[in-house]
Length: 218
Image (cartoon, rainbow, N blue to C red; front, side):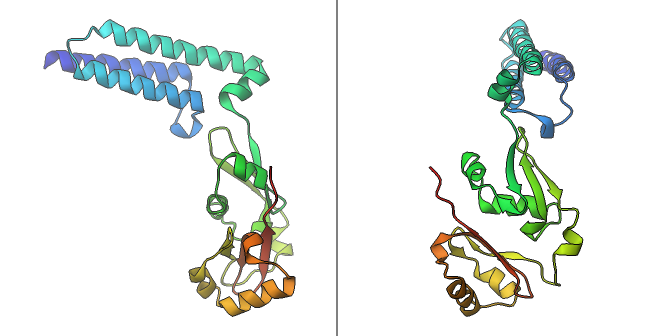
């Protein structure tokens, strides 16, 4: 029992020290390599605690190697941009001037729902308000709102909601914005647009809509 307590205490102190050396404050700042290092350290820690017969030095040595590699990668990444892009990736523009970058959407395997959720988290329901949305290397999405959005976009009590996503009609949202499939069909007929060609269509309670057509991507 004493051995388990002692090993746990030693590993706890060692991991805190390792995290401090690697300079990560929270999971939101983790890059891919950081996450891999954390998972490996976590597994090594659990093994050495659960298997008292294993030499403690083995795990400490392995954690020291992982920590050294992480610091080495960080130092090289600071000095070499190409190496940084390989190991950490690079930021990508997801939305620009209210238009979804469908190539980025495909490359990152994001769904339209992912984009809309990120915008709503910034209180943006009208995609036209998004001046810029950038996917950072740690997977978070940062949004810059159009500074003129409060004056150049007419809004109503029921904000814009997606009524068509990737050719699929969202009937619940149609009801929420006080519309019907007939009104939707009339709009598409007037615009001479086929539903299957629509990536995203939003509509608010006043009937204002925005349509994003699918792009032909290689």
